[in-house]
Amino acid sequence: MGTVIDSHFLALTAIVTVGYQFLFFIITALLKIDKVTDFAGSTNFVILAVLTLVVKGSWHFRQVVLSLFVIIWGLRLGLFLLMRILRWGEDRRFDEMRTNLGKLAVFWIFQAVWVWTVSLPVTIVNASDRNPSVQARDIIGWIMWSIGIFVEATSDQQKLLFKNAEENRGKWCNAGLWKYSRHPNYFGEILLWWGIFVAATPVLKNAEWLVISGPIFLTLLLLFLSGLPLLEESADKKYGNVSAYIHYKRTTSPLILLPPSLYGNLPSWFKSTFLFELPLYSRSLPRESWNRRQQGNNAAKIS
Image (cartoon, rainbow, N blue to C red; front, side, top):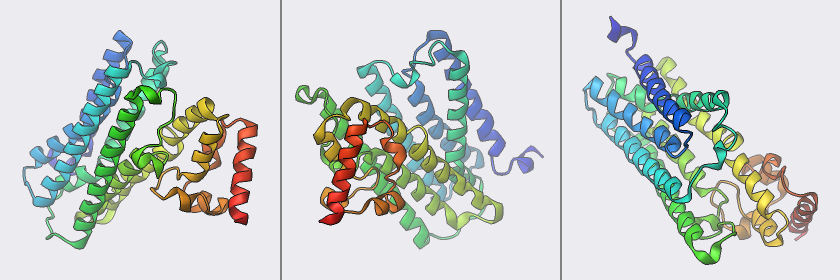
């Protein structure tokens, strides 16, 4: 009866996710450390993928492939973020949370929701009895994931090397893929999770299509809450009075990889409508810097 009731593993994955995140919440609350936060989130994805694959036990090709995609992504990102925080020290996102149990609890609850929701496409695929042959949607999804993981891993490594170089102390990263996007790592992450969803669609039926909420939730999270807004605000406060940074921001796409020569000459309405150049990402620019940026945009329009 229990198997019938939770045939999609929704309750199982929710219980495991809440338990796993609660364990790390206790650790961070007692020890007042934040070095394991991102590791706890990334590895939770791996646990859910392996758990649902093993519990179902059908080992269909599509289930194995998508589970491996999540395992590779989760382990790569989790280990990268863990080693980075161990090297760089504390995570400034938690400066106001370490001594505030309520705010800390809200963060961990939100992280549990993030893991469970974004994992939904793989959870449903692993729980499904349907096993249609490989379709074009599978291949398209696999290609999207492959490009996404490459972009995310490459940009993460490029930024790490840039920040570790002594001559780059106090500079913003504009090397490698960061020449073409202000946040290429987030572009890669969004792309790979949409790829997983696309590759999951051949088995989806009726209400199962609601798993699209996974990549949608991730995209909205990075675009409007914990991703781009926080990093743009931080960079604007540090470099907002530097003319070279204003030029970089005006000519570099916030998310999608594009040549600066192309992006810099696009009209503002096009950038904001189609390329996610939102006013939200410039709210912390000093007024003089904002005026210079607007003048640059106007000059681009005239030319």
